[in-house]
Image (cartoon, rainbow, N blue to C red):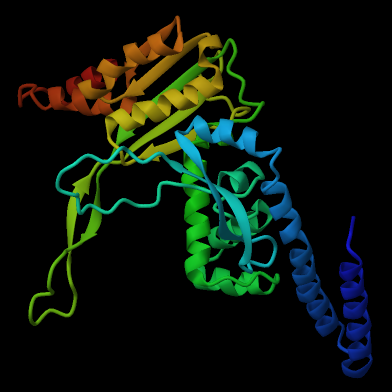
Amino acid sequence: MIPPSFLTAIETLLTESIEAFNNHRNVNTLCEQLKDEFFAIVETLLTPVIEKVVCDGDLLPELKVGAGKMGLHFNGYRPTSIRLLTGTSLPLRSPYFAKARPKSRPGRKSKKRNGKSGRHFGLDFLGFVSRCSMTLGSAVVQAALLCPSFEIARKTLKFHSIHLDVKTIRKISMDLAARAMGRRGKVSISDADCVDGKTVLVCIDGGRLRERRVKRGRRPAGQKRQGYHAEWKEPIQIVIQVVNSDGEISKEHLPLYDATMGGIGAAFDLLETYLRDLGVSNADRVVFCCDGARSYWKRTAPLVKKLGVSNHYEVIDYTHAKQNLYEIIDKLPKNTPAKAKKQIIDMW
Protein backbone atom coordinates (compact mmCIF):
# COMPACT_ATOMS: atom_id res chain seq x y z
CA MET A 1 0.00 0.00 0.00
CA ILE A 2 1.33 3.46 -0.88
CA PRO A 3 2.04 5.45 2.31
CA PRO A 4 0.22 8.80 2.73
CA SER A 5 3.58 10.60 2.99
CA PHE A 6 4.38 9.61 -0.62
CA LEU A 7 1.09 11.04 -1.91
CA THR A 8 1.66 14.18 0.14
CA ALA A 9 5.13 14.60 -1.33
CA ILE A 10 3.78 14.24 -4.88
CA GLU A 11 1.01 16.73 -4.22
CA THR A 12 3.49 19.21 -2.76
CA LEU A 13 5.85 18.77 -5.72
CA LEU A 14 3.09 19.40 -8.26
CA THR A 15 1.74 22.41 -6.38
CA GLU A 16 5.14 24.08 -6.01
CA SER A 17 6.15 23.33 -9.60
CA ILE A 18 2.93 24.76 -11.03
CA GLU A 19 3.23 27.91 -8.91
CA ALA A 20 6.83 28.36 -10.06
CA PHE A 21 5.74 27.79 -13.68
CA ASN A 22 3.26 30.68 -13.42
CA ASN A 23 6.25 32.92 -12.68
CA HIS A 24 9.03 31.66 -15.00
CA ARG A 25 6.63 30.41 -17.75
CA ASN A 26 9.22 27.99 -19.18
CA VAL A 27 7.79 24.54 -19.90
CA ASN A 28 11.27 23.01 -20.22
CA THR A 29 12.19 24.11 -16.70
CA LEU A 30 8.85 22.75 -15.47
CA CYS A 31 9.42 19.30 -17.03
CA GLU A 32 13.04 19.10 -15.89
CA GLN A 33 12.17 19.97 -12.30
CA LEU A 34 9.25 17.53 -12.17
CA LYS A 35 11.28 14.71 -13.67
CA ASP A 36 14.27 15.03 -11.33
CA GLU A 37 12.28 15.46 -8.14
CA PHE A 38 9.67 12.88 -9.02
CA PHE A 39 12.33 10.21 -9.62
CA ALA A 40 13.95 11.14 -6.31
CA ILE A 41 10.64 10.70 -4.48
CA VAL A 42 10.02 7.33 -6.19
CA GLU A 43 13.48 6.09 -5.18
CA THR A 44 12.85 7.18 -1.60
CA LEU A 45 9.65 5.11 -1.63
CA LEU A 46 11.13 2.03 -3.30
CA THR A 47 14.29 1.65 -1.21
CA PRO A 48 12.60 0.52 2.04
CA VAL A 49 10.28 -1.72 0.02
CA ILE A 50 13.26 -3.44 -1.62
CA GLU A 51 15.01 -3.78 1.75
CA LYS A 52 11.91 -5.37 3.28
CA VAL A 53 11.64 -7.92 0.47
CA VAL A 54 15.33 -8.85 0.35
CA CYS A 55 15.52 -9.21 4.14
CA ASP A 56 12.33 -11.26 4.39
CA GLY A 57 12.93 -14.41 6.40
CA ASP A 58 10.83 -16.46 3.98
CA LEU A 59 13.22 -15.57 1.14
CA LEU A 60 16.39 -16.49 3.03
CA PRO A 61 16.13 -20.31 2.59
CA GLU A 62 15.81 -19.90 -1.17
CA LEU A 63 18.81 -17.56 -1.20
CA LYS A 64 20.86 -20.06 0.82
CA VAL A 65 20.17 -22.79 -1.73
CA GLY A 66 21.22 -20.60 -4.68
CA ALA A 67 24.29 -19.21 -2.93
CA GLY A 68 25.28 -22.66 -1.70
CA LYS A 69 25.69 -23.84 -5.29
CA MET A 70 28.45 -21.22 -5.63
CA GLY A 71 30.12 -22.24 -2.37
CA LEU A 72 28.80 -19.23 -0.45
CA HIS A 73 27.40 -19.23 3.08
CA PHE A 74 25.07 -16.77 4.77
CA ASN A 75 27.04 -14.23 6.78
CA GLY A 76 24.35 -11.96 8.19
CA TYR A 77 22.67 -8.80 7.03
CA ARG A 78 25.09 -6.04 6.07
CA PRO A 79 24.70 -2.45 4.94
CA THR A 80 25.26 -1.73 1.26
CA SER A 81 23.80 0.57 -1.39
CA ILE A 82 21.86 0.32 -4.64
CA ARG A 83 21.16 2.50 -7.68
CA LEU A 84 17.66 2.52 -9.17
CA LEU A 85 16.72 5.30 -11.61
CA THR A 86 18.83 8.42 -11.21
CA GLY A 87 22.17 6.86 -10.26
CA THR A 88 21.92 8.13 -6.68
CA SER A 89 23.49 5.75 -4.17
CA LEU A 90 20.69 4.57 -1.85
CA PRO A 91 21.68 2.84 1.42
CA LEU A 92 19.93 -0.31 2.65
CA ARG A 93 20.60 -3.65 4.34
CA SER A 94 20.90 -6.91 2.44
CA PRO A 95 21.80 -10.58 3.17
CA TYR A 96 25.52 -11.06 2.62
CA PHE A 97 27.05 -14.38 1.53
CA ALA A 98 30.75 -15.22 1.63
CA LYS A 99 33.02 -18.19 1.14
CA ALA A 100 33.70 -20.22 4.24
CA ARG A 101 37.06 -19.45 5.78
CA PRO A 102 39.49 -22.38 5.92
CA LYS A 103 40.40 -23.62 9.36
CA SER A 104 43.48 -21.83 10.63
CA ARG A 105 46.61 -23.87 11.10
CA PRO A 106 49.47 -23.11 13.48
CA GLY A 107 52.48 -21.54 11.89
CA ARG A 108 53.57 -18.38 10.21
CA LYS A 109 50.70 -16.25 8.92
CA SER A 110 50.64 -15.41 5.24
CA LYS A 111 50.95 -11.73 4.36
CA LYS A 112 49.02 -12.26 1.13
CA ARG A 113 45.90 -10.12 0.97
CA ASN A 114 42.78 -11.72 -0.38
CA GLY A 115 40.16 -9.67 -2.22
CA LYS A 116 36.52 -9.67 -1.24
CA SER A 117 35.03 -13.06 -2.03
CA GLY A 118 31.47 -12.40 -0.87
CA ARG A 119 28.43 -10.87 -2.50
CA HIS A 120 24.99 -9.54 -1.70
CA PHE A 121 23.28 -12.48 -3.34
CA GLY A 122 19.79 -11.26 -2.43
CA LEU A 123 20.20 -8.24 -4.69
CA ASP A 124 21.33 -10.50 -7.54
CA PHE A 125 18.23 -12.61 -6.94
CA LEU A 126 16.00 -9.53 -7.32
CA GLY A 127 17.56 -8.63 -10.68
CA PHE A 128 20.29 -6.19 -9.71
CA VAL A 129 23.61 -6.33 -11.53
CA SER A 130 26.50 -4.90 -9.53
CA ARG A 131 23.89 -3.41 -7.16
CA CYS A 132 22.43 -1.47 -10.08
CA SER A 133 18.95 -1.90 -11.60
CA MET A 134 18.97 -3.02 -15.22
CA THR A 135 16.77 -0.03 -16.12
CA LEU A 136 19.65 2.20 -15.11
CA GLY A 137 22.37 -0.17 -16.27
CA SER A 138 20.93 -0.46 -19.77
CA ALA A 139 20.81 3.33 -20.17
CA VAL A 140 24.38 3.67 -18.90
CA VAL A 141 25.80 0.99 -21.21
CA GLN A 142 23.97 2.34 -24.27
CA ALA A 143 25.35 5.81 -23.59
CA ALA A 144 28.85 4.41 -23.09
CA LEU A 145 28.64 2.51 -26.40
CA LEU A 146 27.14 5.29 -28.49
CA CYS A 147 29.26 8.15 -27.14
CA PRO A 148 32.94 8.58 -28.07
CA SER A 149 34.05 8.81 -24.42
CA PHE A 150 32.82 8.15 -20.90
CA GLU A 151 32.90 11.89 -20.22
CA ILE A 152 30.48 12.60 -23.08
CA ALA A 153 28.35 9.66 -21.89
CA ARG A 154 28.22 11.32 -18.45
CA LYS A 155 26.96 14.57 -19.97
CA THR A 156 24.42 12.70 -22.11
CA LEU A 157 23.06 10.78 -19.12
CA LYS A 158 22.76 14.00 -17.14
CA PHE A 159 20.16 15.25 -19.63
CA HIS A 160 18.11 12.14 -18.77
CA SER A 161 18.28 12.80 -15.01
CA ILE A 162 20.98 10.18 -14.45
CA HIS A 163 23.79 11.65 -12.39
CA LEU A 164 26.92 9.47 -12.36
CA ASP A 165 30.62 10.21 -12.50
CA VAL A 166 32.94 8.77 -15.14
CA LYS A 167 34.39 6.16 -12.77
CA THR A 168 30.95 4.74 -11.94
CA ILE A 169 29.86 4.71 -15.60
CA ARG A 170 32.98 2.78 -16.53
CA LYS A 171 32.52 0.29 -13.66
CA ILE A 172 28.87 -0.42 -14.52
CA SER A 173 29.77 -0.86 -18.21
CA MET A 174 32.68 -3.22 -17.47
CA ASP A 175 30.68 -5.28 -14.95
CA LEU A 176 27.82 -5.78 -17.40
CA ALA A 177 30.29 -6.57 -20.19
CA ALA A 178 32.00 -9.22 -18.06
CA ARG A 179 28.66 -10.90 -17.39
CA ALA A 180 27.57 -10.68 -21.02
CA MET A 181 30.82 -12.22 -22.31
CA GLY A 182 29.91 -15.54 -20.75
CA ARG A 183 26.53 -15.49 -22.54
CA ARG A 184 27.51 -13.95 -25.85
CA GLY A 185 26.58 -17.11 -27.76
CA LYS A 186 22.99 -17.08 -26.50
CA VAL A 187 22.78 -13.30 -26.91
CA SER A 188 23.93 -13.41 -30.55
CA ILE A 189 21.69 -16.27 -31.69
CA SER A 190 17.97 -15.88 -32.39
CA ASP A 191 15.22 -18.31 -33.37
CA ALA A 192 15.83 -17.43 -37.03
CA ASP A 193 19.33 -18.96 -36.88
CA CYS A 194 18.08 -22.53 -37.34
CA VAL A 195 20.65 -24.81 -39.02
CA ASP A 196 18.58 -28.03 -39.10
CA GLY A 197 19.34 -29.90 -42.33
CA LYS A 198 21.69 -27.16 -43.59
CA THR A 199 25.39 -26.85 -44.31
CA VAL A 200 27.28 -24.86 -41.70
CA LEU A 201 30.55 -23.22 -42.72
CA VAL A 202 33.04 -22.44 -39.95
CA CYS A 203 36.01 -20.23 -40.86
CA ILE A 204 38.90 -19.73 -38.42
CA ASP A 205 41.99 -17.63 -38.96
CA GLY A 206 44.58 -15.85 -36.89
CA GLY A 207 46.10 -12.41 -37.24
CA ARG A 208 48.89 -10.29 -35.84
CA LEU A 209 48.78 -7.21 -33.68
CA ARG A 210 50.80 -5.53 -31.00
CA GLU A 211 49.38 -5.00 -27.54
CA ARG A 212 50.72 -2.16 -25.44
CA ARG A 213 51.83 -2.93 -21.90
CA VAL A 214 53.08 -0.02 -19.80
CA LYS A 215 56.62 -0.44 -18.48
CA ARG A 216 56.93 -0.72 -14.73
CA GLY A 217 59.43 1.00 -12.51
CA ARG A 218 60.90 4.47 -12.44
CA ARG A 219 60.79 6.56 -15.58
CA PRO A 220 64.24 6.92 -17.17
CA ALA A 221 65.86 10.31 -16.73
CA GLY A 222 65.39 12.65 -19.66
CA GLN A 223 62.28 10.87 -20.96
CA LYS A 224 58.87 12.51 -20.88
CA ARG A 225 56.93 9.24 -21.01
CA GLN A 226 57.09 6.01 -19.10
CA GLY A 227 57.21 3.92 -22.28
CA TYR A 228 55.62 0.57 -22.98
CA HIS A 229 56.29 -2.93 -24.23
CA ALA A 230 54.60 -3.98 -27.47
CA GLU A 231 54.72 -7.74 -27.84
CA TRP A 232 53.14 -9.41 -30.84
CA LYS A 233 49.82 -11.12 -30.15
CA GLU A 234 47.66 -13.39 -32.28
CA PRO A 235 43.94 -12.61 -32.28
CA ILE A 236 41.88 -15.51 -33.63
CA GLN A 237 38.65 -14.73 -35.46
CA ILE A 238 35.70 -17.07 -35.98
CA VAL A 239 33.05 -16.70 -38.68
CA ILE A 240 30.02 -19.03 -38.78
CA GLN A 241 27.80 -18.99 -41.88
CA VAL A 242 25.09 -21.09 -43.52
CA VAL A 243 25.62 -22.34 -47.09
CA ASN A 244 22.76 -22.94 -49.53
CA SER A 245 22.44 -26.09 -51.62
CA ASP A 246 24.03 -24.27 -54.59
CA GLY A 247 27.18 -23.53 -52.59
CA GLU A 248 26.42 -19.82 -52.08
CA ILE A 249 26.39 -18.15 -48.67
CA SER A 250 22.81 -17.88 -47.42
CA LYS A 251 21.53 -14.30 -47.23
CA GLU A 252 18.68 -15.37 -44.99
CA HIS A 253 21.06 -16.23 -42.15
CA LEU A 254 23.27 -13.49 -40.79
CA PRO A 255 26.88 -14.57 -40.20
CA LEU A 256 28.18 -14.83 -36.65
CA TYR A 257 31.47 -13.08 -35.97
CA ASP A 258 33.60 -13.30 -32.87
CA ALA A 259 37.26 -13.20 -31.87
CA THR A 260 39.49 -13.84 -28.89
CA MET A 261 42.98 -13.01 -27.70
CA GLY A 262 43.04 -16.09 -25.50
CA GLY A 263 44.87 -18.40 -27.91
CA ILE A 264 43.80 -21.40 -29.99
CA GLY A 265 42.37 -23.29 -27.01
CA ALA A 266 40.13 -20.37 -26.03
CA ALA A 267 39.07 -19.95 -29.67
CA PHE A 268 37.84 -23.56 -29.88
CA ASP A 269 36.10 -23.25 -26.50
CA LEU A 270 34.29 -20.20 -27.87
CA LEU A 271 33.50 -22.02 -31.11
CA GLU A 272 32.07 -24.96 -29.17
CA THR A 273 29.75 -22.59 -27.29
CA TYR A 274 28.40 -21.08 -30.51
CA LEU A 275 27.93 -24.39 -32.30
CA ARG A 276 26.23 -25.96 -29.31
CA ASP A 277 23.83 -23.02 -28.98
CA LEU A 278 23.11 -23.26 -32.72
CA GLY A 279 22.17 -26.93 -32.37
CA VAL A 280 24.77 -27.92 -34.95
CA SER A 281 24.20 -31.64 -34.31
CA ASN A 282 21.01 -31.28 -36.40
CA ALA A 283 22.87 -29.78 -39.37
CA ASP A 284 23.33 -31.79 -42.56
CA ARG A 285 27.08 -31.22 -42.45
CA VAL A 286 29.70 -28.92 -40.97
CA VAL A 287 32.61 -27.62 -43.05
CA PHE A 288 35.69 -26.28 -41.27
CA CYS A 289 37.70 -23.87 -43.38
CA CYS A 290 41.14 -22.86 -42.06
CA ASP A 291 44.73 -22.42 -43.16
CA GLY A 292 47.23 -25.25 -43.05
CA ALA A 293 48.24 -24.89 -39.38
CA ARG A 294 48.09 -28.21 -37.54
CA SER A 295 46.95 -26.41 -34.37
CA TYR A 296 43.52 -26.04 -36.00
CA TRP A 297 43.13 -29.44 -37.63
CA LYS A 298 44.06 -31.53 -34.61
CA ARG A 299 41.18 -29.94 -32.70
CA THR A 300 38.34 -30.24 -35.20
CA ALA A 301 37.76 -34.01 -34.90
CA PRO A 302 37.53 -33.98 -31.07
CA LEU A 303 35.21 -30.98 -31.30
CA VAL A 304 32.70 -32.57 -33.70
CA LYS A 305 32.73 -35.75 -31.64
CA LYS A 306 31.91 -33.74 -28.51
CA LEU A 307 29.10 -31.92 -30.32
CA GLY A 308 27.62 -35.07 -31.85
CA VAL A 309 28.17 -34.00 -35.47
CA SER A 310 27.94 -37.01 -37.77
CA ASN A 311 29.15 -35.43 -41.04
CA HIS A 312 31.97 -32.91 -41.26
CA TYR A 313 34.64 -31.81 -43.74
CA GLU A 314 37.97 -30.04 -43.37
CA VAL A 315 39.16 -27.80 -46.21
CA ILE A 316 41.96 -25.29 -46.67
CA ASP A 317 40.56 -21.87 -47.51
CA TYR A 318 41.07 -20.58 -51.04
CA THR A 319 43.46 -17.76 -50.16
CA HIS A 320 45.93 -19.96 -48.27
CA ALA A 321 45.61 -22.78 -50.81
CA LYS A 322 46.42 -20.39 -53.66
CA GLN A 323 49.30 -18.93 -51.69
CA ASN A 324 50.83 -22.39 -51.22
CA LEU A 325 50.33 -23.28 -54.89
CA TYR A 326 52.15 -20.14 -55.99
CA GLU A 327 55.12 -21.23 -53.89
CA ILE A 328 55.21 -24.40 -56.00
CA ILE A 329 54.84 -22.36 -59.21
CA ASP A 330 57.93 -20.40 -58.21
CA LYS A 331 59.89 -23.70 -58.20
CA LEU A 332 59.15 -24.38 -61.89
CA PRO A 333 62.10 -24.08 -64.26
CA LYS A 334 62.96 -20.52 -65.17
CA ASN A 335 62.61 -21.25 -68.89
CA THR A 336 58.95 -22.34 -68.54
CA PRO A 337 56.92 -20.21 -71.00
CA ALA A 338 54.49 -17.75 -69.41
CA LYS A 339 51.60 -19.26 -71.37
CA ALA A 340 52.37 -22.75 -70.07
CA LYS A 341 52.76 -21.45 -66.54
CA LYS A 342 49.36 -19.74 -66.76
CA GLN A 343 47.77 -22.98 -67.98
CA ILE A 344 49.25 -24.80 -64.97
CA ILE A 345 47.94 -22.13 -62.60
CA ASP A 346 44.43 -22.21 -64.13
CA MET A 347 44.34 -26.01 -64.02
CA TRP A 348 45.41 -26.11 -60.37
